[in-house]
Image (cartoon, rainbow, N blue to C red; front, side):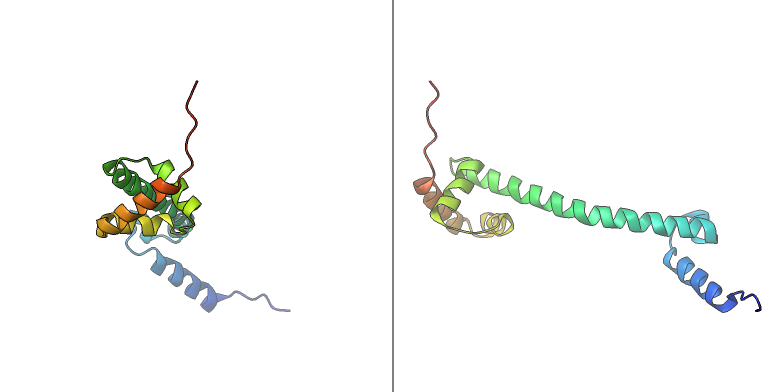
Length: 124
């Protein structure tokens, strides 16, 4: 049985990979071996950083809510606890949007949270 040298398929695969590496610095966009490694590494970083972006955004929302709570004389933890106790199920993204764009509604949420928050026992 004759040996198959996949000429057209291999050329297409290389062309696809080099097209993915367009814009990379130096030989990372020109040479097949370096381009393949660069594309694989870029994919790994992209997967990791999509998860990091979610983590960073949640941190940003919490910082915004904390700042808005402190302006109204309460703490973030008491505010979140009060909302849970009162049955208000808003996620942190929505709470931060409300804090930035609609302060009157956020004031009402803070009042509701203050009324229904658990009292913290005094230290003896």
